[in-house]
Image (cartoon, rainbow, N blue to C red; front, side):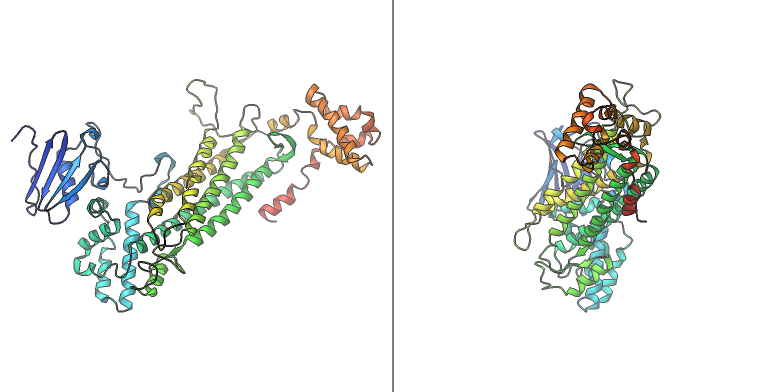
Amino acid sequence: MRQNQLPVLMIPAAIKVALTLELQGLILVVVADLPGDVPAMAHEIIKAEWQGWQGCSAHRCHSPLYQLLPGNQTRWLRLNPRDRQSKRQPSAPNSKGHDPMIERYSRPEMVDIWSPKTKFRIWYEIEAHACDAQAKLGVIPQANADAVWTAKDVEFDVAKIDAIEAVTRHDVIAFLTHLSDIIGGDVARFVHQGMTSSDVLDTTLNVQLTRAADILIADIEALLAALKRRALEHKDTVRIGRSHGIHAEPVTMGLTFARFYAEMDRNLARMRTARDEIATGAISGAVGTFANIDPAVEEHVCAQLGLKPEPISTQVIPRDRHAAFFATLGVVASSIENIAIEIRHMQRTEVLEAEEFFSKGQKGSSAMPHKRNPVLTENLTGLARIVRMAVVPAMENVALWHERDISHSSVERAIGPDATITLDFALARLTGVIDKLVIYPDNMIANMNKFRGLVHSQRVLLALTQKGVSREDSYRLVQRNAMRVWEQGADFLTELKADPEVTAAMSVEEIEDKFDLGYHTKHVDTIFARVFGA
């Protein structure tokens, strides 16, 4: 054996020759006279010879690390040695599901919706239900339709399907080829009758988005429960309201929670609407005309999958539905950020009216041991940006050529899992933050009193106008005294009582009466009844 030649790997007799050579810095796998599963065999050769190669596992056969080059009876598999990693083993499929964009920001149930195994299971169910409908119509034999269901308990081999796709460069054909190997060619010839790939792909995507919506709806409901509990707990906990970041007038912490509850309750309605709008399926053929398939097949498949038939499709389901769905995710994400921003401001050292729960052993900084940072809500602010990234591409997917082009596909393969997985995680994290949020009522009172009564300026203004002073003069009098508080640290009530123009219109008792905090919170119960019901 030549020095640059690796050992010949013995493989099944159906394969005449399998030879691996290293030539001029390239690894070439030559597999001659193969009957069928070319990439799978090539993968086995590579895995046996080079366990240190990244990307050699079959589920990554579409990787740019190597490609199959057809030629007569021989196919060549080419790898670039620069990508070899001597210590890193080949990556393995994520048995729990789709590889999320960032694993730390994902939860298993949502990830599983986007797993290859779940996707192929839905594909199979669509094809099998379609066969049932075709049999009822007399298009295919009932026995063949029944035989398709023999694969109902089979766990489809993702690696084999990916390996076939490396040759066919068509995911649905790769799956159908694999299914044919399982149920037999005679049965498989009736599968996919009159259908186009988008019938499978689009209907599956909408099943996945519908399932994702169900999880997100449950997430929002859990967040609403936490917000309501904290709102009732702090209904009468007074704090200063702020506009432009500046002290305005008193509110309560309960109203803050209630405000966020109402916003999320609107999001719940939006999410339910988005779910209803995306829950459609299409089994209508190459251009949506049902030329080669009966509309009854679509109706049957959709009914079995919990979908409604798309009223009118082309080769695809109209993408305005998907645009609305992802826009809704973007709105929910923005609401998450809205709440997170409020908490972050409340945790500022100078404010410290509320604080994320700081657990035992937690560290805030590698350099400053005293730090207790709002890391969770900062994280949520960033995650909201990621979810919103899906909105514009989803909008741009609406405009497709004629009855369909494929420009939407690559976008949806990314934004479908990434946006829903990220939003699911963000909602769960925010619920945890709200549940454990530490509230500091004493600091709220201290902050409100920091500017010595200025929060009552509007009430004094209104009282002066009611006493016959013009609006302009009333504003001038109140502002004049307020500026002494801002600039000299004076007490607002004291300044008003010492101002002869003010006391000419109002008695001291009347002025003091305008500094009652209860005046600002007298309608809290009314607001709560509006938000939470009587």
